[in-house]
Length: 196
Ligand code: FES
Image 1 (cartoon, rainbow, N blue to C red):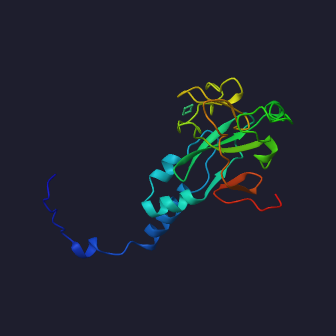
Image 2 (image 1 turned 120 degrees about the vertical axis):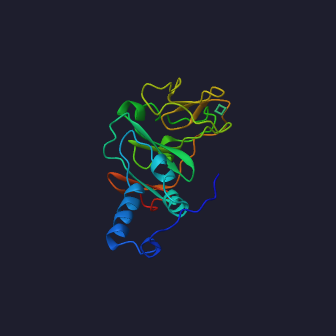
Image 3 (image 1 turned 120 degrees about the horizontal axis):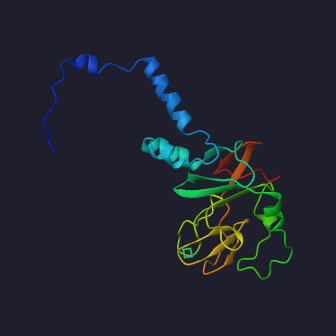
């Protein structure tokens, strides 16, 4: 790589402070990039294009606009370097995971203990076997026998509660801390108040 210096013809001008307007434009861009995403979007491209300090701040808590997500749709957002799956479940999907006896499950857990609102499932999209990202975010993806996600690496299958139903994965997909700021905005990375 050449180390030749490019002469600065007008060094005073080059060192001038950015105008207030320039600063304002940058702030608007930065806050827009850390803000909401809509259905079918990935937050990752926005976060990765930011500078490291802003990237870390944005990844600690991520706000997601979920209002355009239709029943049966899902989106992926990046949070602390991991994909988080947000799925708006249909009444049939919710019904399919309401069994009372979980003793036969690989990692027994009731659906109601994994959600805050029945329509919305939020899980970390990393297979608990060896860390592949399971498929199933798009309706056309292979979602496996239980309708949630299927991990193509070694064949684990998850249901629409994110619970493992077919190994070798040993654990359910983890639920990250999150809270509803309002009916259409999720904050991932923040625990919900205890009375939710
Ligand atoms: Fe998913 Fe092995 S990493 S089944």
